[in-house]
Length: 267
Image (cartoon, rainbow, N blue to C red):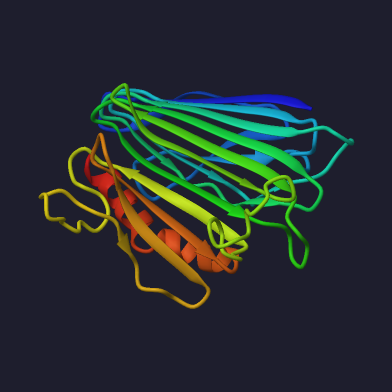
């Protein structure tokens, strides 16, 4: 199955945002939901099971100058096996123009046993754009081994590379569960925050006057760390956990709350 979806948010000239374009194809159906703030929220609704091996899904997100948009999904995405030798693909392309804000906060990607999935995200940010970009990966459904998955994220800020990140898990990726990668954790994820007006994440100065990473206090079943990123006022929160619930807690408190507060107040 092939499907293409697109959402375009633009400033309405009165301090708010309207959706100029909202279209999709099953299983990438887009629905606007009511919100309690001035940021439009679009949900990606799965119109069919999957992604299944052989599926090729593409979503384009564009946030115009001075506009803001929040994107969520109604449920976790479960990558499933299909015909032998086939690969499922999900690609997201996002562009955030000057003074725009994008909050990308989907539910988890679950890599079911026997699947072969590739997830690719490419984000382009203007120099004064704001971003909150969360990605979560769960290695297999309950009591089953993980399938194969490669998750790649590429973010450019003001025309310069900000983040290049790739993770491969499953039987085709030797050592993925070892201490050099997930260390036995079954869930992992990250939250990228970009805010040119204020350094995101807890600042820890180093001897040169810059900032360095910080490991957060451990909680049962999970670990997390902040990493400042060169080339912009950005930070990456990464986490591993024993389950999806613990992972979400690590990637939400306080990072997501701060990101949404900054986005709403900075427009």
